[in-house]
Amino acid sequence: MSYVFPAEKFSAARRALMLSQTQGMDESMVSAFHECRAGLHRMNRSKLDEDARAWIYALECFMDTEGLSVPAGESAWTVKAKSLTTDEKLEISRLVDELAQWFDSHTD
Image 1: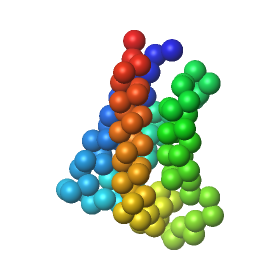
Image 2 (image 1 turned 120 degrees about the vertical axis):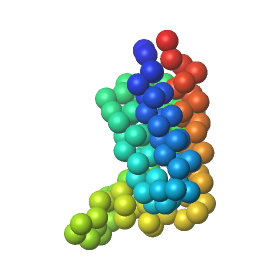
Image 3 (image 1 turned 180 degrees about the vertical axis):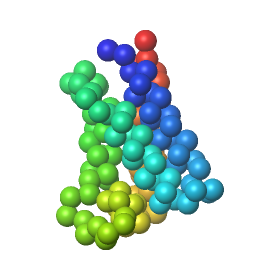
Image 4 (image 1 turned 90 degrees about the horizontal axis):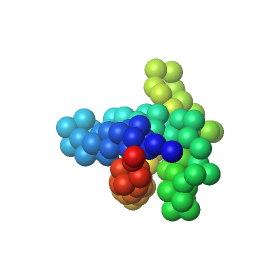
């Protein structure tokens, strides 16, 4: 299976998180979430190793917006990003970095 597209998307997510100094951390986190979701869309996860599946699961838990109260005019991911602690944001950055490296190392 080719992981070129997920590698590109997770690399873009990593770049988005690095731009938090200029965009603001919440906006960068939302951009990264969009890239990650695109990179994981329709992926057959059974082909991934245990580490990659665990990183994806953890990342998706952070990205989950179920049960959030979302005011009109805001996206669920914006509300989620604003609710994350500094430690959670650092963990998300670590997960994105791990996945970006993993997909990059598994491209054809």
